[in-house]
Image 1 (tube, rainbow, N blue to C red):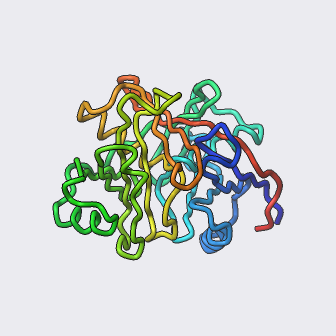
Image 2 (cartoon, one colour):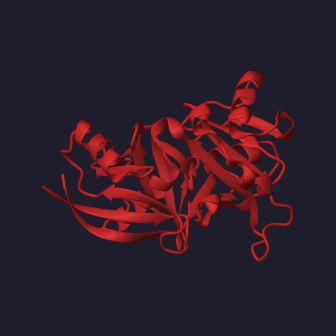
Length: 280
């Protein structure tokens, strides 16, 4: 049957410069195999399916698939799907949108021209063991002495985040994807004084997920959320900042982080690039 469909670009005000997500708006009745097959066919980092919620507390339920399987949570699909849901004529029950997904309920707020989600709590944190760091650093072509810190920042996806000495060094990394294997690896490096013309851009971020068919993700909400929880908890980042991601892929992703003292909000622009129907 024909179902409404949107392909939304997330984390960039410039069309096709962020991270696209495929959103099936009327997904009720599609079985798991068909969802997985469609995600493989789109071959995007994520494809999502909007469904009726199973709890009165939520506005909708979201299922998120990569080409390699289902995720309990992901950031840019959350924002892109919320954008598509609103654009389809829906309104939240309360002040904020409430998304039901594999990690539970996730709040999304309208923040001017941007949407932002509340970073989920980390289900695993703390330092990554030295042997794992050594293995990952070797796959990245990075000397162990260059790794300033390495932390687990798991909030659904099994992210480990390695901090390097600078954003420029992050951009220089050329990973061996086969050697990375099933590791979900995020890199973060600071820009002292920000980027020229964009002083609010304090960090460069990259994400490598070859194990689920996404060698490098252009712009990654869940990873940036985990990094923000880590850096804010350790007192290493200001209350608000912007992270750049996608630079190495020719994108211009900008992830806006705001810690309001209660929640850490992860936000960015979202815009529909393709709209129509899909036969599923």
